[in-house]
Image 1: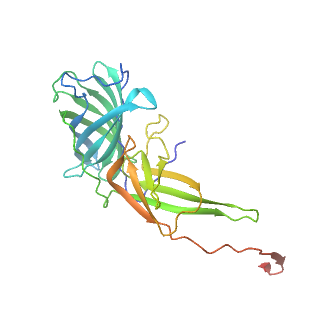
Image 2: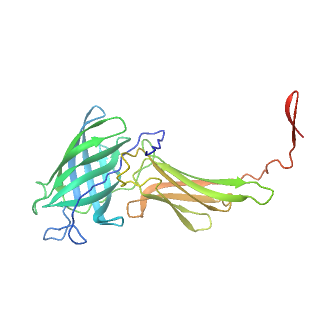
Image 3: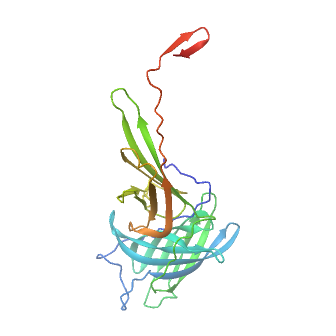
Length: 289
């Protein structure tokens, strides 16, 4: 059973587009060479937060899914709600043939994770007759959505603006086992965010980098819904004391997301644990010497 990780803030869902049965290694493109799905989509999420919410979806770069020869991954951004800011999205696409596409979308919607599934159709070189529609869900709501393709120009998604309903926190801490025969020491890097992302890159104080994977695969068919993003990795040895660890979220292609950064400093704990402790049971309980 899939375990959810919940942040104190509401989450913003990841956009995933699924399209099936592709011939060749690139999406079919119109004569001008631009892929069918790229660009801006304008739509409405019906009944979200108690009322219809306009949204703008920007699909940007795409590349083959390394885990599925028939699938493609997109990055980009989405804004849901009146005057809402743009936040990153991740998308997975599989063509159905005849310019039909099966969609599964994850993005950010007013501080709540929303998952959108449905179908899109791109029939000819024209753009504004390309419709898409389907169903959406958050952790406690569901409804329908629809959209039309606005244009195929390459989007210019802004950097993430942390604060308010968007959060990202990276932490470095240590695990130590004390044993008379040696024991072990370990550095642990962990991050939590409600920003759509596929990994976390940590730059250590010495300049080296470590990538922490997503705790749960976004596009796994066994995962019904994700309401936060957790990243975790570890390696032998204590963290570097008083050094800055810089954290950056990664998009679906493993590239840093502009603005989605955090930092932490390990101040160390130099106090050793008690050793050579003995205990005895007596009338008044257990006593230590």
